[in-house]
Amino acid sequence: MYKILKKSNNKVIIFTAFSVIVLAFSVFSWQVFSAANAVDDNVEIISQTINKADINHDLQNIKEEKNSKDDSQKDKVRNSVSDHKRITFKKSNKSLQSSSNTLNVQISDNAKNKEIKLSRNNNQKVSKIFTVSLPNANKSITARMTNDGSAVYRSNQQSTDIVVQSFDDSARILTVLKGIDSATEYAYNINLPIGSTINKSDDGGIIVLDNQGAFIGGFAAPWAIDSQGNKIPTRYEIRGSSVVQIIDHISSITSYPVVADPWMYINLISSAKWEPVNNSYSLRVTPT
Image 1 (tube, helix red, strand yellow):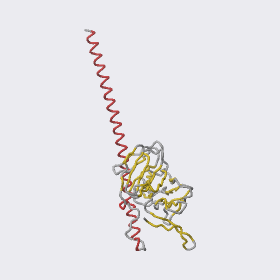
Image 2: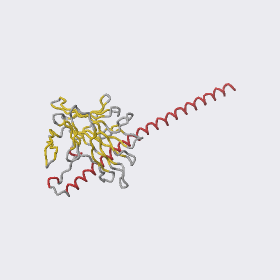
Image 3: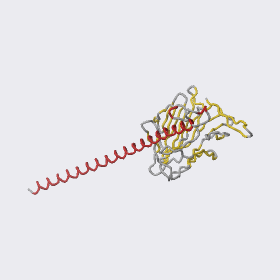
Image 4: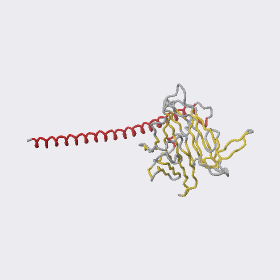
């Protein structure tokens, strides 16, 4: 009788231990699943933040241009996302790539290489390459894709997220400043060919010329906007081979997050040339 009871107790103990293990594994699996979904939700929130900033930026442009005394500028929205066709990134080996008839965009799926490469297609041959580093990138961050095809380098520790979007004729690196502790300077190092120069255009954008004065690539005029649609003062500074975006966001009236938008291109300009104007020089740009 004692032996029978002992065997029964052993079976109960084994069954109980097995049940505890199964329960613990289920709880752990649910926590992992929930954490993964939480990250995805946060990435989509970042995407929504950018979409809202784009709308507010367009509204600001429309308002300013309607109030402009220059009739040629009225009802014209500069750098509007709606004017460009989005191209979704796709994973290829250890990189993310997008491709249109005229432009290829490539970035690393982690921030180790910290750069974005634009290459121009000409009759299916690469005729031009423009490479720029991502700002303040943490090497341990892996890019996550949003539903709209953006690549997000999101960091829980840092106070700034980096988002890369690709278009048929350009790309942009968005910085999302999460709070007052976010940096005010973001450096974009350009891989410059020998003899090339970085120049600032009249509207505050950046033009990169080779040693013959031919256009290599550039940045559109910078903008930054907070979550309430208020413009944040921003500008580019040229420091050696880097373009540094200054974002003066630290203010009691700033509503976070703040989105800043360096827009890169290699296809929108065919040439650029310095010309004398009123005892000075102006960079004359010829669109494609």
